[in-house]
Every structure is written in structure tokens, then in C-alpha cells.
Image (cartoon, rainbow, N blue to C red; front, side, top):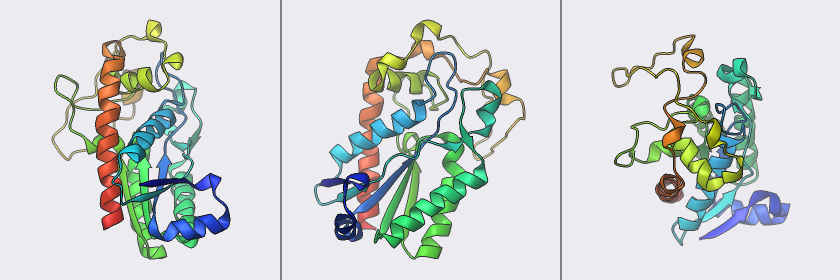
Length: 242
């Protein structure tokens, strides 16, 4: 595998690499992550998983990696402060424009790697629209959905809870304030499989974060980044062969 970073190449080098590589576009957010994690959490974590994936991807696959789009659709966090959000419409336009630009630069295979839950449905819409409009293959995934929850852990990734706090203890430990961590005062209700319910006051009831970050550990973070990275490497390889 050869890893090429888009921003480090000249236009001639991009033109040479783009047709044979998988163009990987990480997208994330800058938003509140409870009282103990920094606003850069989603951006830092998708970056860490993508880097791990690029190190594990199949030798026959070339990756053209774009800089992470750090701003996402996070309006549901605005009430807490500490959030820089795009509207869903703006996020859709920005990601669509980036995929369109990649296609015009010669990329034939695109993978949008999502690092923020609020972006997921919009990324899927962009992938469908862009593949049709630009005539290229476009895929999307949220990295945490590529793995089954490890044994003994929660059955969901959550927001600023055990999952993300553990990953941040590995990726950016100097930015984690475990002394400020506390359990969420509420819980996200379990729903029938396939049913998506959005109560207007849910985020306020759980104080903007889920589950208990006090159960996080750097060891669990290392396990998560390895599993997510390997699963994402498999996804990149699948896109390359599609």
C-alpha cells in the first residue's frame, strides 16, 4: 500500500495517483463533548482511526487521503455551547462539493469516513447523489459501525462516554479531564430495532453526553482503535476492488 496525502502533492502528482487510488475523505465535527472531553474529539478520533487503517490496508491498494473536514452538522449541540456547527444543508453542500472536486481531479473511487453521528444520514445522501451526478463510485461509513461492540462493553458507541473517552485517552490523553468526568444524568431509551425516535429534549435530559465516561481506559481505547482501524482497512480494500 502507498499512502498519498492530497495536500502534499502537486497537481501533476494528484492527476497521476487519483485514477488508481481510493480517495478517502474523513469528516467529523467541532462540538461539545461533556465536561471532560475537548471539542476536537470527533475530529481527533476519526483521524486516529484513519491513520491506523492506512497502516493496515492491503498492499495492493493505494490511498489518496484528504485532510479531515473538521466541521459537521452539530446543531443539536449548540444549546450547550462549545460547538461550531454547519446546518445539515450546508454540510451536505460542502461534502458534495469536495466529492465533486475529487471526481474532477481524476478520482474514480471515493470513501467518506464519518466521525460524527449527526453527519451519518447526510453522508449517505451525498454518496448517492454524487455517484449518480459525477459517474464515480462513492461509499460512506461511520467507523464505529464497522465493528461489533467488544465483549464486556456497552452495545453502542455513545457520545463522550466510555467509547470516545477511551479512544481519547489513547489518541490525545493530554486533553482528557477525567477528574471532571461523571455519569450522564439520563439514558438514551432502547427502541425497537430499525426505529429512530428523536425527542426534542433528549440531549438536555442527558446533559449532552451518554453513559459513564468514568469506566473508560486507555487499554480499551487501544483495543477499539485496533479493531476499528482494521475494519476500516477492510472497507477501503473493498472499495478499491468494487
